Amino acid sequence: MIMARTQTQTKEKITQAAKTLLSLYGYQATTIDDVITASGITKGAFYHYFKSKEALCQAVVEQVDTEFKQLMADIPQKLPAIEKLRHIVFALAKLNFSGQWVNCRLMIKLMTEPHDESPSLAAQLAEFRNWYRGSFGEIIEQCRKDSSVSTRTNITLQLDSVMAIMMGSTLLNQMDAMTHSPNDFADQVLKLLKY
Picture 1: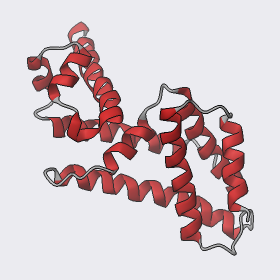
Picture 2: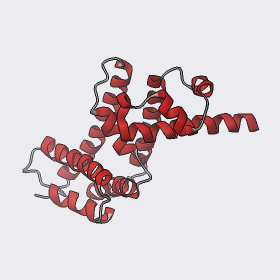
Picture 3: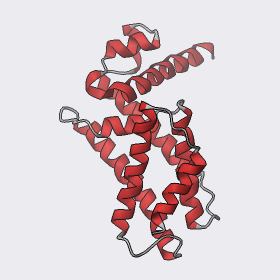
Picture 4: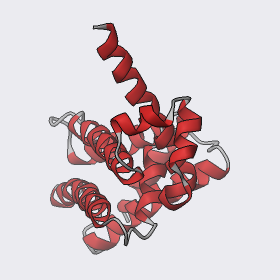
């Protein structure tokens, strides 16, 4: 039992170190040696769990994908559509502004890099992006149907605007901690969609 817990802890140390490094420097600039040093493990321990940097990155993306999907699943389904949108924007803003959650920054960093040598990683990231956009798109469509947001603006433009704001706030927060609350941020996003 202790051996299994130690193995789980070692693997978690590796993925957490990789998550932080990949969110800061991206896939191309992060090396296996960087991950080994940051996690305080041996090269042998790294290769016991991951056969390559690509395999590690795929495991990290899978973990992050699961965390994002859990956030979406945690939205109370009985809420009106506009409150569902507010719920997820607030949850993401709160996590991002905390400085402890690097998932948004990580996915932005990875999705904006070329992955020509790793088609499976590129496909995994494209699948995540499509799911993420689709999830927001479904909620915005519900908001349009119940007239809680404007229908004068094209839905694709509304979705692109929300995606750009979410990405922009993540990157801005990395440069300088946000001074407004996640509540204020969520209110501003919803206000944008009403016009």
